[in-house]
Image 1 (cartoon, chains in turn yellow, cyan):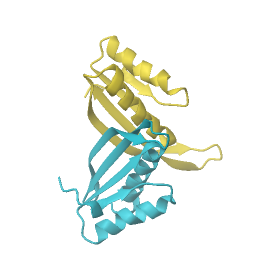
Image 2 (cartoon, one colour):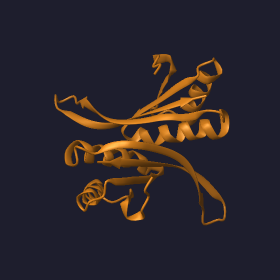
Image 3 (cartoon, chains in turn brown, blue):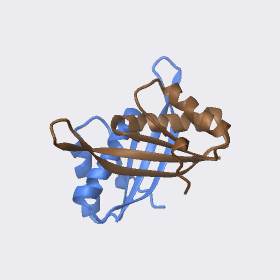
Length: 92
Length: 92
């Protein structure tokens, strides 16, 4: 599975449409696959982004695969916490 | 795919461990498949629940499939809003 970094959109705390447009732009410049990644509370927004792209902007895009996982994040005090992650693979 | 309702755990606003234990209990009474469902902001917690179950309690459980979708929710004023949903299919 192709995983070029420029095909990946990381979901953060910007307005939702920022990420929707980033995904749509990737498809518009010719990418056939776009990966939407998020961690923690941004996971819900990643699903929103995928659904909005698919339902409104790139209607031929399909969810090819969804992976979930756990990442260990280092804290400033030297400890670490686990955070869930998601990767949504869209293809058209 | 078997989809008996008693195999399904709906993620809401209770403490996380409530849902983790609900999933673990389903496996312990003999279910081979448990479906974790959530909508909107609870989607992130659904992923957390799946990951905690898999990493700490039912280590032979695997994520068999993940589906995302959009549901139309009626509002009190007669309008409706779209909300994203997730279904995580765990099997052991």
